[in-house]
Length: 55
Image (cartoon, rainbow, N blue to C red; front, side, top):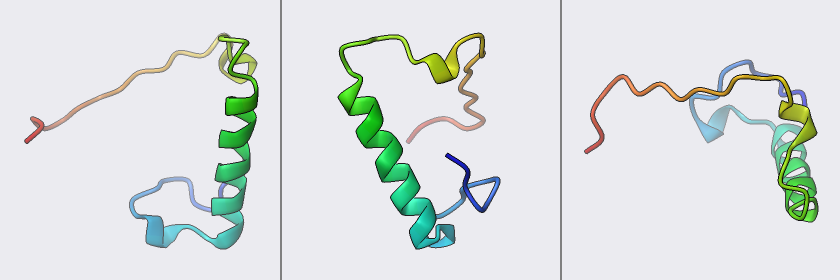
């Protein structure tokens, strides 16, 4: 999935094509739910950074 914007700050920044690509990718993930490993993320490090406390 290739989005037109590198960073997503608001849903307003998404084009119709971006939204359709996002939903199609989500559907593929749901259809492959039986296989718990996602090949697209193999050998990738995923981290979440939180810079502010949650309210």
